[in-house]
Amino acid sequence: MRHFLILISASFTACGGNGGSGSSTPPPAIFPTVTPIYEVQGAGASSPLVGQVVTVEGVVIGDFQDGDTNDSRNLGGFYIQNVPDADFATSDGVFVFDGDNPTVDVSAGDGVRVEGTVTEYFGETQIVASGVSVTGFGSILAAGVNLPAASTTSNSDGELIPDLERYEGMLIRFPQTLTVSQLRELDRFGEVLLSEGGRQFAFTNRNAPDVAAYAAHREAIAARRVILDDGLRVSNASPIRYLNAGAATDYSIRLGDEITGVTGVLRFSRGTGSSGTEAYRLMPTVEPLFVSTNPRPARPAVNGTLRVASFNLNNFFSTIDSGQSNCGSAGTDDCRGADSSVELSRQRTKIVTALSMLDADIVGLVELENNTRDSLQNLVDSVNAVVGAGTFTYVDAGTIGSDAIKVALLFKLATVQAVGSFAILDSTIDPRFDDSHNRPVLAQTFETVADGARLTVVVNHLKSKGSSCASDGDPDLQDGQSNCSATRNSAAAAMVDWLLSDPTSSGDTDYLVIGDFNAHTREDAITTFNNAGYSDLADDFIGADSYSFEFDGRFGALDHMLASASLLPQVAGVLEWHINADEPRALDYNLEFDRDPGLFDGSIPYRASDHDPSLIGLDLIP
Image: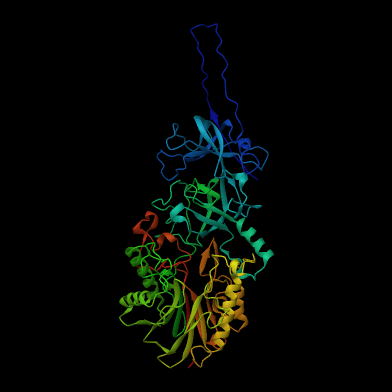
């Protein structure tokens, strides 16, 4: 139920001549017919009065005019609200667009009369003002709105969003505690995705694939979301609003942080121009303040005498990406990663900082440029320059497969040595492993220098969810696994059988399979390993809250640590080091869109990549 307090005091001066004659009677004042705002809004997604010229009255509840003294709220207009009607399906507020240089400067609390044309702009009902006059003053209390919304709707992109149309243009307050769930567009469009009920996890991170249950899950999470907007029309604003909007000293916003009682005007739009997500957005009228409930993790500590890490580098290429297509094993693929030598230096610095703090004895790398050895040598030399000359070396596997990226292995010479030759799984070994989609697997057996205990580390990078495999007979089944699930599962089955053959001739059954599976914990590819006797260490040691990646505001474990049955008793500790997935992209190495170079700090590991590294501690038995 909505509650309002509205106080409006107005005075009008009627025009008319006195002419000095006491007997003359001035003509009556002529006032335009005032249309209630709720009639302008109507009960549907669009106004029933589009194209008509109307006169409306109300109290300014949000001053977002351009050209005034407040540069933090510039939307080219202001919001007004009036006394509600009895129909809760209609909004009582509306946006008034008055352009870059408004003739009348309004302030929150002003009573105003507006004449203008009703329009729909990217789905938001607006009045394009031809005349604005201040008529008095008033105040309106924010309506309390609780999530989840009673229902959802779809935007023009087909994405589910909460149906909050009844509040469009109104002053509202979310009294609940909301969780920061996505920061992908924080720097470009000033967006912070908020969700009620804590972090939202990918469906198959906790549930077996299921069409009906997944559809219900999508409805449930959509009803709990709203975007907090920076209230600006410009993109790439500097400084970035909300980046440091917390009470804690040196606060830097992270996913999982919280905010309570956020207040503002609700609008429906794509945000900055036509580029952002089409959704309901809160334009704050009270400065938001976040609580650091997910502080940055320190240097990782894990039990065990041998440490093994898995780290997706988010496309580390020693070749500068200038738009050319000379990367990959054949020299015909598009290059990725850094677009300049400055960006490459920044990217490498962050990664080296993270690798040195991980302090692992063996590191499986994912998304490394697939060249003979230049990218790997570049990275190893840079790490050794920090941790000590000759500390790390690598398994020299050359180019692997035909993709632009490959997997790789680093290891510390003082603690382990490579035993025998590496082994590669691709489609020539098993046709079930489709290496036109999955990156070939790299396996290497290691032996501890101290006591000769053996371990085979297997690094993989299976097909992503981002592009379709429907043309290969592997469509998205809408069961929560997204694209290419059968392709990943076939690769997993091939990997299980390949390892049974002891491909590195280790003579030891201790296998640790790591890397980016692009499959969440309950998906088929992981279940195939589970059914073969492998334990998902993050699931076993961390549980349902395990995650290494965020996509579309949903968290999940894509980077897994799978231990064979014989290895499991030797596992001493497991850790997901959340230095990347929770951090905004604004802090990574990129300088695109005129990003402020001063945001970058290479001495800290946060946002070195987009995936979180995993760390396993082992006490191997010789």
